[in-house]
Image (cartoon, rainbow, N blue to C red; front, side, top):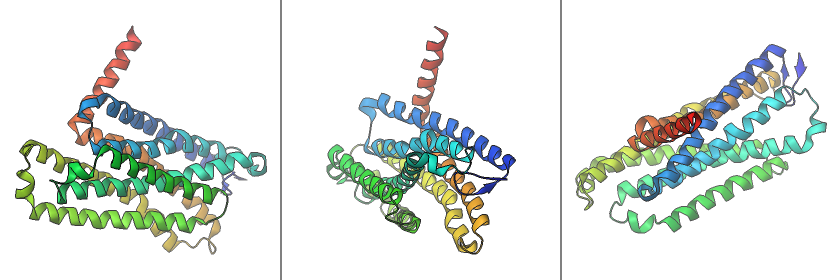
Length: 286
């Protein structure tokens, strides 16, 4: 056994298994989130406010898949030489926690957008302008980067980051319960939107898609909070650290699957993804 840079005693086989899982998730997630960026860019005139929030969410997801997971692989395979990689380790702490906070807060922002769209359909266009949406995204990232910087410099403990994410998750779930009942009560009003019933149905489908994203997010994050409740970090430090490594990978898997949820649920994204992949394939043949 040897002590990885994460401070956990791992066997060589455990380190290899964790590294392979991280590499697979990194490749799948980087591809999927890159497709989201390209799809939203190619939408142009068909781009809507939810697409901007989804792009922001994809930004936090791709930072996990393309940057954090390769750093995790490096740390798993370079022993306990943390003192040789002080800057690297600080960057890894910053990136990991900033990305986690960004994901949770982006989920919250996306849900607020859906609450306004379903609860106030006639006011949505005036409230969720491009300027207001971009301002909201900037606030999300300022919060995430602040948390990441404070944690990387040991000014705050991980409990603050976990509390923020738990609060965002809990509030998001409450809002979706509200969305469900509001949609039921005001279905007739939504169907009477001047742009037509097709647009109303599209809005409801977007809400359902994001609900699936939030549900998947909840399933991936629930073990983090439950694990802390059942395994005490001081009483069972080795078990806690090993278990926490796998939970971190589960959180990364969440970042990898979101783009494929969009692809399955949204014809718009399916079409855009297929077009992008077809163009790449043709270019390769030429």
